[in-house]
Image (cartoon, rainbow, N blue to C red; front, side, top):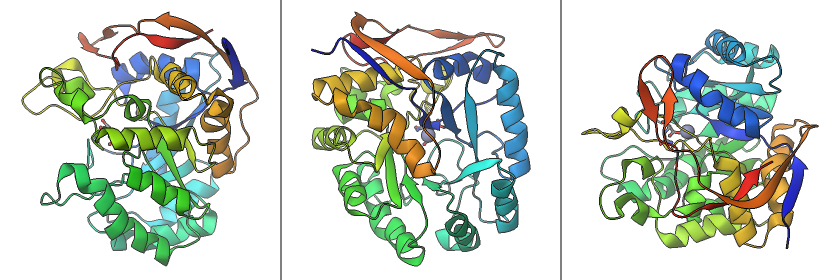
Length: 346
Ligand code: NCD
Ligand code: ZN
């Protein structure tokens, strides 16, 4: 039985770092585990132009210490009015690694997102020509569609037409939550990939209502039925190069989670990699862990894997409880699956 695992240092292909005090508080957890991360642009106000992304990157770099070997890979948030020329310059100047499409109002801080994908055709053409990935929050926002069906309906009504109009466009369907999404990506061309979060590999929708309402288990896309969780575990551990790691670690203060209208988002940065390792172990697929965590992502993005390595070892531990945010007197509660975690960072 494998007790220690040394792999190429992983990257996180979907991360929310926020800004200011929260950035300072959460960044060290990701730096410890990942060499690079795709930084989500849904700040308030959002990161809309490459100039915004450049300034945000400077703030993240200023929050790193000299010995941190961590590269933030920047994105911008598409609106109905995004200028394709601005995106092209951002890519050519090596400021933008990807571009994010939030359907307007699909999730936290997405009010200025895209109301109709046809409004951003000009940007999609640029991305296709530059081979820069489009990252998609894949949920429709029609309130008449049941929240548990919004990913599948998105694939049918929005993703499929985008792919048929832009067959050469690289797309990451982010934080997939259904067996339908996993099957779609498995069968699609190698231009289409997906990230899978640690929490969607370990909880199903019952966790949100376990003995009462559990706001810290609530995120978007929302966790689905057990059969979907099992399909995600199969996809992640399959060795298929279209699936890779993206934590979607999304910190919110305890106050903003535990309120009349609590925010969507699960903060898993303090134990994300360890949970993934445990899942691969439970599925007898530790031999495929490095591909999912460290190789498939860079390959899709056309980047080299990290040169550093990282070691995990088998040991039971309890993740930290509250994380205090210095300077604002508030705290964040990290994701806590039931039971202990079986793998640890060396
Ligand atoms: C994210 C956040 O809080 O920014 N929330 C979430 O539930 N995942 C936004 C997102 O990725 O949907
Ligand atoms: Zn996210």
